Length: 190
Image (cartoon, rainbow, N blue to C red; front, side, top):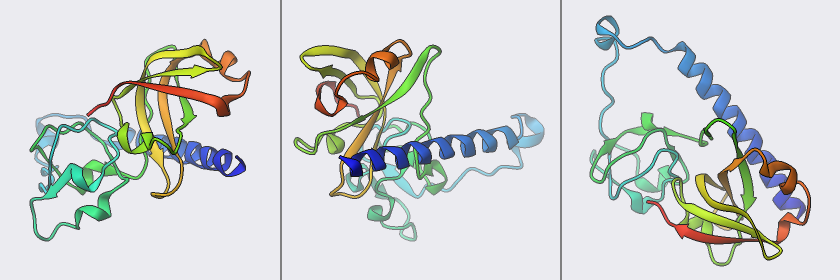
């Protein structure tokens, strides 16, 4: 249990730092316009998506194929996250990947981190855009919660799912035993 709490804490810090880095990088970019369009050349397409992939999708080797023989092998990109959505057969490059997801929510909503059970392997099935219900003690806590990202360490470690939740759920979430939650999968995306 202590390892799971430590993993949640480390992933929360990593996601926060990634969001800050992304925000700073976004603030430094030049506005779009005729003067700036010639400056940035489009990134070379190194990979093609084997299916539709959402922004914040955690890559698996089966999600992509190399379109350039000099591009790193697919296995080296597993557990990286897409910065944008990519259609099936759509191209992307290493510039479209990041080490941690950015958890953006609508106004009045917050990201909520939940541990995923190891069996069944929900961390391998769920991804950004999936929809789940969260139950605790036979009572629904969240219904139709949108998955923002799935955070996993190594193949053998437990995963954590970040869902978008109303801010009003936070006091209720803080009370009770959150190690005994049940997750009902409504939609697996993509």
